[in-house]
Length: 329
Image 1 (tube, rainbow, N blue to C red):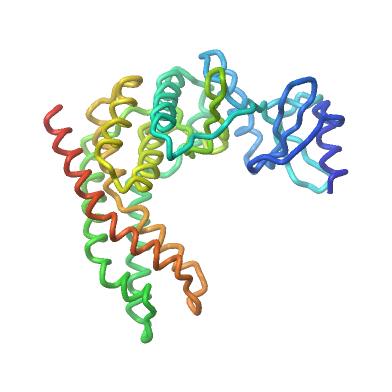
Image 2 (tube, rainbow, N blue to C red; image 1 turned 135 degrees about the horizontal axis):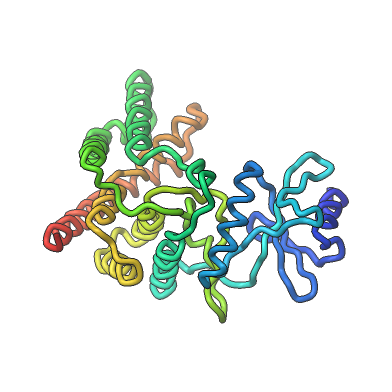
């Protein structure tokens, strides 16, 4: 296996590099430079897109893990095992510590800077090829899946603790799901979408590295053209869940993003809708439905209990956010 990887490294002139494992990558060090090899599932066009995007970001002063071409001038290298690989520039640094509020705000600031800078990026029609389903389409699909799961549990004669609790709380969560879907439908009809541009696509605390110099943004494999506030909304939801939807932290994150990359009414509304949708509830239900029903992990039950506990805190925060939005506009 290592011999096969060594052959791939040779195509990048890194056959004699020192190597060690990182998070989902093989880090290669040679001549005081770092590179990271990872498996690549995308197309040749997606590889070119990432290469052009990485170059543009570097020109804008945003350090990133731009792909590296091999000796043949290709971005993607197929190994003897048939697996396709891509090599990225790499850096030493530490990830965002979600227990450190300063780290959280610095991460938000850098994300806002990225969104602002990348709005001028264009590489032709290829960019549009990476559009994914709209948030309305996504949440409508989630709602259909929740109904399917609810109906499945209803038919089960002997219900376990998870299924009984899910049945008990379903109506409260699903009512909110439907409200968000309806609001997004109205927003789409009124063309209230928020600013569009290149999105990271999978932004979280693992995809930024802090170091003595400027931070580094990494892992752009899911980058696409879309509503940029989606990146911030996904990151904000994950952080707020860890802090039980603490209002002061949410306000600080929102103000920091707005300071660097001012939000318009469409951005605020799209953020509100995304935070309003009980996505964690859907994830828990979806994980249950795809698991072995004979034995349900207590972890599923614990996650559902925690989500129910946080439901009031989340609703309280969202009420305050909506009131603030109505005052601003």
